[in-house]
Length: 234
Length: 306
Image (cartoon, rainbow over all chains, first blue to last red; front, top):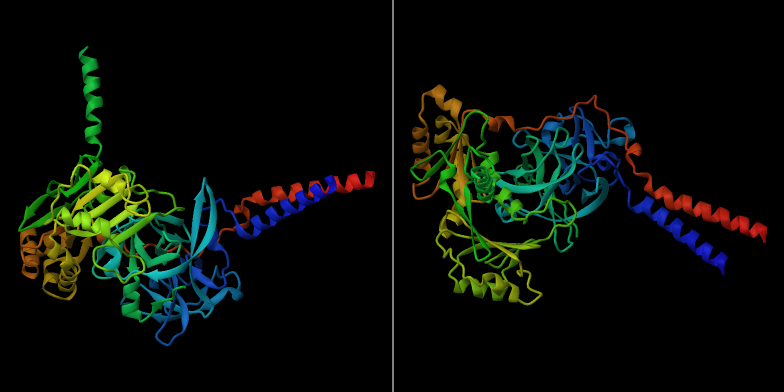
């Protein structure tokens, strides 16, 4: 009887241990989950280009139907190779910018293994737990006013997930938000989480700002200038 | 004795300063409370002067910031009222609009609430519901006094109704319903003229729309005005040639050129290699694995002993 109980205990403890390893990776640095290698590619993770380290924004589809990732244009030259998570191995190569323009601070790199998810890092008393939210919809710039006061998030390779609120829109596609970011966070997706559990609601990607006030290009700008539409799921 | 009175007087004054975040500037939303309902009303005194229905904020020196401070007033008030929570784990909000929405993230105002608010003659823009608060965004041309029993009325709603909240905040936007609907067009009109049109020569850099209060703004480069010998009022007159005077506007005249400083965010340099993540893992999962190994060892020992 005791032996059986002991066996049950062993199985139980092993199950807890293994599931903790597999499901709940924990970090002590708020941005550490963004530095991992991710395949498929998702939003909110680190990549390297010729100008340095930045953050991938969100998965999208171009006018030819091909899939890839959107990020800030100022992170890379037009012909720069991009690597995720960094350029320490040739196997991390993900491509070069396929759509790149001076008109708007956005570019598109084709990578067929990209999915509409964003990395979101929860902070639990100083321990950080990464989760992935599916992007279920995106908000055009005209509707952004409805989200004043609603908690919005950005996830970037330097400061991880930070929270704040949107407070204004600049002519015509720039969103201003009380949200902290630092160098390297350029490209971070800006999103809210659905209260119904649908997933993440996408607003745009980070292009500039100061440490406590940041500017984002709305998805409407990327659609209108680059002809690229964010992927959504479901 | 006099000292005690002074201390008491100081203590009494502390709550009056509750909403004064920056001693140099008033907030652009004044907060009033009546019967448990907070009223947020546009406060023109937060601005340096008013000219031709334009609320002008001058950015000069480092003591204040027209963009960061004025922009964040609504956020600061919501935070102090306990409406905005700062954790990244549990969002809880709903957005209700009066017109039937075709967007996944908007919901129609429930019938019982729509009926109730229409009886009060409130012209609602939209309603945001948080875990413990209800924020009603109303236009200037609506009735601003809600009845004493609003909170109890909200609490009486059936449990399924998402609008049963303890704190009710009514934000009276300084624009009429008709003006509110034109806000995006007005912003784009000023922005277009600032980029390629007549306002460019008057140092207007960009336009913006601030959601609380729902004011369209124009951003003017103050140094450019000085270089060109254009007065602030001439720049405002030029803006008024684009947007008629009946439409209230916010004008930021920036002699520090802070707008250029906030874009773009600098990059992480190439020589900063990716920090290793392995050392950052919290090794807590090892504890149950170790415990199970100990349990296996004990079991094996017992078997051997038998």
